[in-house]
Image (tube, rainbow, N blue to C red; front, side, top):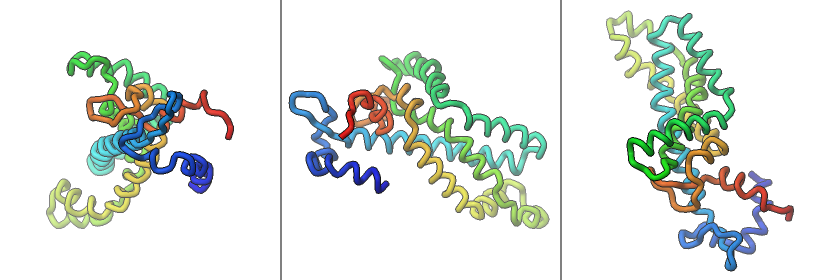
Length: 222
């Protein structure tokens, strides 16, 4: 963080607050250059927030099912496959999103291109699932047997006792997933459309990592 801030000093000194004004656009090579980063910053937070939302809903449910309802041997096999997903290169997720989700959006939602913020959020959310599940699957099972011995149903114990007890783990997994989502480049770049405009759910957008990758070829030292 310190390194990025120090390297940003020349830009902040020359362009200043204009980089973060809604009126500034990203046009670095025009006759009157503009370096508006607000659409990219907004797009990054939008996509990351959607991805974490999807990942937490599915991840918490999956972790609870694996831990409390599935036989241990079968759960360990399923968890091994889920962990394998974390090792798949992000470009593979991007390619699947491009060939499956984008085409589905074009076909069923009658979109012109299909590349949008929602597709990027779904693809990124699937990529985050292993991190969420792996963090929560080892959740404390304290009070489970006590609750069952009192005659409470397994579902009641899970919702009223276990989930409140593992709330710190849920928050920690959400923070880790959000940090992972902020830096994802290739998968998001392939399905979001890469337009330097303010993002909409079914519209194109751009993220800071994608912008960095796309502009890398025109950057020179200093």
